[in-house]
Length: 459
Image (cartoon, rainbow, N blue to C red; front, side):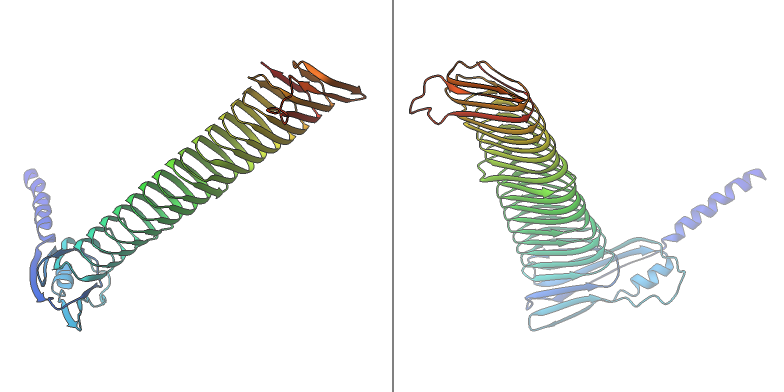
């Protein structure tokens, strides 16, 4: 008796499972499409759709369905394609009526439509809630889908895709690409034309693009590499990772992170966004404007400008001029080979291994330290509050002029025509270092500290 009770539920489960997908069917047909120049496919229901371009003059389809009885009656029985053509234009349409019965359970295991058509047609596909795979179309291709994955490959001309919710993958496109989505994961590669992507809440990977790239995003990640054209990105809360950009790179962001490597011209404007840039080559200008962020620069072969407030700045191996304006924060510079211009308000600056001709600094409040300074012909520093401490790794010849109001002055230069003034709280040291000639007549070190100590030594 116990054995019978145990086996009966198993039999019921087996019978129930076997009957859930008891309804299945297959349909197929074909139409003459030899006179067409363009084709529109319209399907007002979600399913798996495969569209493939071929070398035949026919449009053919196969439709396979498997599901429970209510789903079978709605989708398979109601599957009645219409095909019309006129003056080179064709339309393949599947229209399902709106659902009139509520609380119907549709159990679907397979709902797949495969369409094969002449590859030389201009193509438009319009559907909703579908999984799309389109390939081998030689002409312009437009795709509209409300929700569901879209995969496209081997398109001979321009591509446009609009898909609100669902992943978009496209590769090997021989023309311009325009993508629109709301929330998606986008993978785009091997494009010979320009790229324009607008997708507010998405993760994007863009690679192997011959033309310019323009991206707009509100929140997500953007990974781009191997771009032959320029790159323009505008975002709110986004992480950028860019590598190997041959054209100009222009980025803006309200919050997030920016990492760029091996690019040419670079400009960034934003706030609350950390920026790391390295290996910027053959550029006219690197221009960064930020607020409340960390800026890290390394191996920059371009004139460099960093402006902002509340910035922590680190710059290494800058082989051209650099200009920095920072309202509050810290500045660490190393291996600078061009002219240095610095304006700081409430900022400490530390300079190591400077090998340029000119240093110009204006500091309101903060310490200034320099080590390994060589190749210098002119130093001009003005500071209101803060000590100034410099070590020159060179023999300096030229004019020396040191002034402090509330502080001390120390140096190790042998001066001629020297003049030292100590009056009240004001200290002045001025004179000539070495022998003045035509080659060094304009060399000058002039440092003025209103409230702070000055120390300058030369090796």
